[in-house]
Length: 480
Image 1 (cartoon, rainbow, N blue to C red):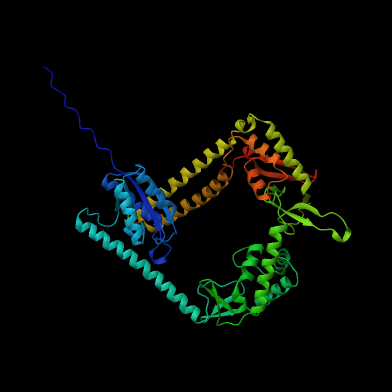
Image 2 (cartoon, helix red, strand yellow):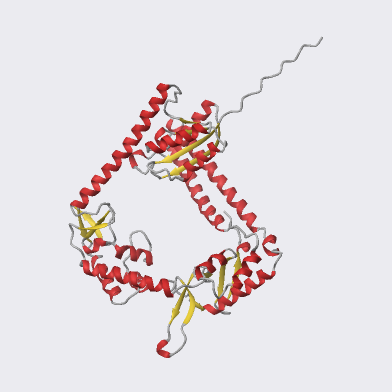
């Protein structure tokens, strides 16, 4: 008689955990994401949880619920993709009483739960009370920090000082006062004079870069750095707080009337450009040097000739030996129309289907992303070993620097790869037919939006004075 076999008990499925990490914007509360993830993974290992995802909101305040990662975490629990939300501390989820209550209710209704990796998780009434006290403390700390900043800003403005510590180019702090830089201040005054005399931002760019003066956080001046500098009311002896200007304790480099005249003139010129200067291939036409080109018009009214419309390289005047800088718009328009006619005739959309490079680019991006994730986990584990004393600090620093160097290289490669991963339209031929049918009546913005669905760029050839259209399905994936 054979012995009866006993069936082994079917093991329970381990609870699925999603780690939610948030790095505070407040310096004293800013705990690295690596440490939070390490603590969360260690907690899940002790509890027997399976980590199915790690979501992070780096550098986002806990006072707002409009955080991408926390929304994904809520969706995972409500979609039955995760059973437990694991936090480093209760305050990581939210510092808002209302948001915390709503989140807890949503997770409870979905049958999940929220746990802290470093604080008690007592399910009893006393435990819930303790959690309520800690979340209330988090809200209190958030309000206290906010009130402190408001008080500091209001106090600074009342004393005629800028509410923030950062000053525009040309100014510096000296013994708690805002003072002009003796070398830079005359340049700012001259910039206002030139602009009001008729010089454009492009003219100011060439003048400033030729003067040897350099912006603080860039190699050279461009449209954005110049306008950001001149837009500052500090140059007129004013400070801004909550959208309103107030008299400053410092003396301006120009008077208020001059600064307001500059603002009016800039808005007037911007309005003219919005109405008159719209070009279909700006940002799509590409110079042989690799820089995107912008549209422009030259009016020959004095010579009774028709205006010249074309595209020119944005590095105009910056690169020696560049060669030709511009091309007539008609040449590129003809190339684009020929391309659209070819795509429109391809009713079976054979060309997009035959392109395999998109798949290659997507696989390359996924590979790089996985390697970055692996490095992050390695760094998180390494940081945990340092905190527990298992790894000497000197060895940690060397290994950390190696990981971060490799990670930076991979991030650059990932950004490059993602630029080549685009969604190819289901029916490019239909888009091309629609564009050709409405070519003369469709607004420029709508035409450009439809065109970008088919065209990655238009490569300019100065020698033949022509352009070659590069479809979105003809990209070349980068390598790392």
